[in-house]
Length: 408
Ligand SMILES: C[S@@+](CC[C@H](N)C(=O)[O-])C[C@H]1O[C@@H](n2cnc3c(N)ncnc32)[C@H](O)[C@@H]1O
Image (cartoon, rainbow, N blue to C red):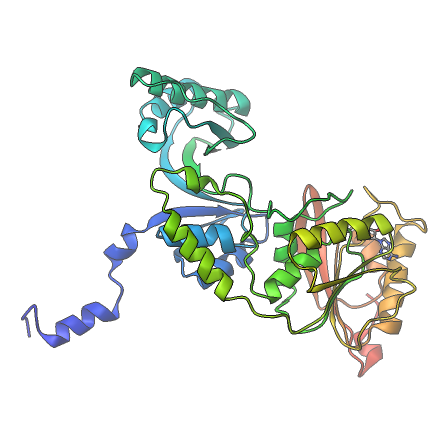
């Protein structure tokens, strides 16, 4: 059976996706917060990305243009999606300049487009990262000049073309940033809390806690409402960046507006009405006001109930539910009773009134967390900005209470 047209041969070539087809896909790298790579990998698998590889605060994958657009619209835990275009070894700024000048930038963007360079430099060879980025900028504009074109302008705030420079020791990777503004800028945060939680971190916490919209939801210390908004978006299968005004890939030469409309249209067809209640509560009226503004901007006013109330006085709104809270850490927000007494009160409230609930708490106050006096079923280390934190999960069973609510 060596005949090229034999049915058997055809069958074999259809069953397996040819490797070459995969290689025609483009490589992308999505960046994320430390310790949230696992959640990003799971999200990319769901989107159908190929050859996914977890790295340090990033995940690389392969896909076509449609996947790139989907990644920007759908990924909840990604900070940005980069398209690596060049990598090489270099050990000094002059060499970097010469290599960058060899790149055909004029084929990547037009002289009338503005650009900006973001950088992450982890190298002893390039001690002054700002100077290194400046050399790269010089190489780009000089390249345009030598090609007889106008010099493109730098716009640090609203650049149309975003270029990412990453140097790890002597390995230089240059990428085009397809996202532009980082993907946590969903477009709903109109009001900024004194101690806000990053949207991508909030989504990652919810995924780590196993939130799938299966139970009624409560954030009793909601601040500006990030956790409740992200929880509602997830449960309703609404992409986090559906309402973003723009992505940097819209300024690329190969931008396909009808493909983006198709991806957005398909996303809208997937909305599922919420089957559970979502409550966002806080004792401070100014937090409640902020939360209202943000929930409205996220188009979630019908899905999220916002109420003022002190967690220590309020009873649970339902018998069983899923609670996640981001209490004060005594850094930007002070507690009146002292941090250990505050967390002790949280524990007492959970033990007395929230039997039947799953409770998750994120805090940088690890010693104070111990004052909760409940045995956590999970402890997950995370970073909230520069603060090392722990997300702790508690299952508040009604049966065998003494065993389950043991002190630790
Ligand atoms: C760290 S902030 C939450 C920030 C929030 N995750 C966000 O993204 O904006 C903690 C919040 O807990 C609230 N809070 C403190 N003690 C409280 C209590 N006893 N009952 C209800 N809310 C409380 C504060 O008003 C504050 O808004």
